[in-house]
Length: 364
Figure: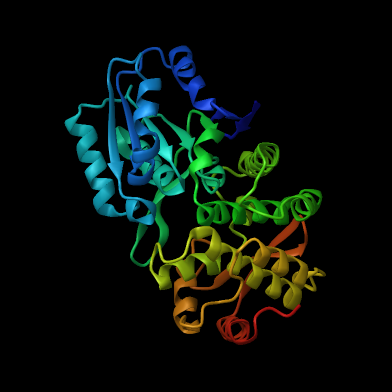
């Protein structure tokens, strides 16, 4: 079992990573929340079919446990679903001593946390991730829904009471979702830890045959990296923005293709390659790009910008990025592995680099 504590200015909370970790949830609640009135499990259609009934059995000792199933993926993160969840919570008479249990991937965690953060001005919630991708979003308290004009633009900071990461849930994870989550692990290594990045290159040569030891190690390392950054900058006024390496272009790709047409991690992987190219051009970042591209390709990632995307439209999307100030696009770049830097990039230069990247790919 791998356990550690996430420390933020507003709260500290435990993270438990293990096979069967969800068995520890009920004892945790009885010890730390003995007067909880109702438990609302929020999950999605896919996870409901696979795990909801078993998970509900684990909560059988509690008097009032109710569930709500949302659509899978980014379709869960809409105003309509958010409103429906609030209405359901009110109809079921949740109060300020009720709790939300978020059982699912990153999208479920985002909408569940946003409901928890705004219902009656905030009630507690716990993250129970069921995907590799959610290792990143489950830590740090950034919860949000999407707007048609951009991803995660409507949200709050609301820290969970715990993260209970049951590795058994990952056994049913499709390969495409493993790939999506792994991109965030690569990001965490690039912005923080060259030794961890080298370990990933050396040890992970397939996402289809991940050992439990390797899975547990890279998940815990990624979460610790994110936790250390969040502890320094909970509300993203400084260094926490470094966690957005690859996301400025990645989010724009997701929005332009249509949410769900490409996974978050696959879009972020393309965004990271582009950010590395910018880092080489603008910051003289010395990096073996071909090694990274070949490795990601071997793991099944696409690393080129889709041909059907328009550079000007991508630029317009990036201007809506939360790091942008005064319609100036700001990118997380790398001076070297573990040394990120935020740079404002002029529109004309960015358009030129996007067009080059789309036409030729990244220079090796």
